[in-house]
Image 1: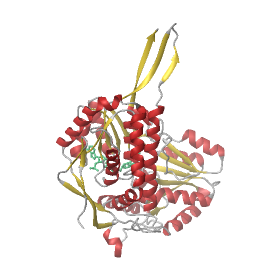
Image 2: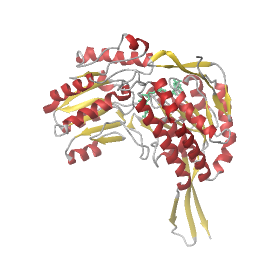
Image 3: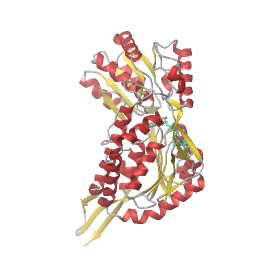
Image 4: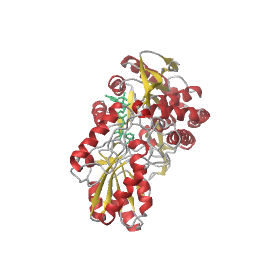
Length: 481
Ligand code: NAP
């Protein structure tokens, strides 16, 4: 069967061109689809279309924009199973995880659809007599969205929906490793009857179309999620043009495990946060910082639990962990495992590429646990973005906090403890944007702000009511009557 072609979407038209393959990382014999490799010229046309559509879309009543988002959500819901299967086949995460993510995208569309009828400004009393003053939210203009492959539906959704409801028009550039899940959102917008030019989609290499998007004069804001390396380059480019930019980037997320924690729950939470989605979550735990009195027992329990995880094709029932997203990602992970071996010795479990039988067709790595990791080691400092956990020893809570905060990143962090004071000391003292207590460090909901601090992020937060800050601006009005 020949692979389906997924065209780019410019000014309400499906536009074909040169193709690139989207292969299943669990079975590289399978081409999930052929996507259209856009060009800088096509990107310019997409921005032009978004620019032409902007005045009408921006002046449409918020509830009317919301009605279109509700309709798109209905369409996504009606295709729920297909979209989830597409995601597992293109990204590798397990089908239950993919279903959870698609459900989240639908909820995000509905949440921001409602914002169309709710979006508030400020009205406050004036110091002056007979002056009425207030501030209203206005859209920013044409917005560029650049998204990664690891949450290939939810991240595009949590940028697209708030951008649209605020009245901006959009050009999206999805990740080349998993473009289909984002394409499904665009298809739903098209089928919902969004006016032409409001949403545009140009897939293709980041270096070609991504830069063209950031450089396009009509683009007034860029929201990016991805690696620090690319994010920092885009920041420079955007700053030269003095346009808004929002960056959500890497992490080196710690989970502190104190001796007073519910031991079994702490083991489950760390294993879940370190390995589910193959450790390819920006909020994954990659450092477990454990109080010394329970250290040896904890290492043993985590290793035993990790050995029971089933690695395989995420479409199969019972599989806990899928493959790395592609060969490059797998090789990066294996490279870090070698560095870990050189620094910390043989891992207590895992440490190899999985081979033989079905494994030979995909990019599978054993979930890997290193013990005895200390702060100066590379595997304690750099983002690996794979199923590798470094377990570190802390003398006490204060020492654990010092280790946890001793990172340039500040995305998510977790503490496992039954002590209320320690929980709150963690909440107030931890330098990260997303904190959990007695839960995995990964796993967020759409109703609250999301984003990091330090080198992990730049600009306003995403999701929840905070998402409106990036995608709108205030206009302040004083009226004498
Ligand atoms: P990436 O390589 O930085 O790519 C992200 C996006 O940028 C992709 O669409 C990519 O296109 C595009 N891009 C690449 N070069 C570009 C350029 N020169 N100009 C404009 N765009 C360009 O990151 P990734 O590998 O997809 O994602 C993994 C990273 O994302 C990890 O570091 C992870 O921590 C981070 N992440 C952070 C969050 C968060 O919320 N903080 C969430 C998820 C992921 P191509 O795909 O065509 O290269």
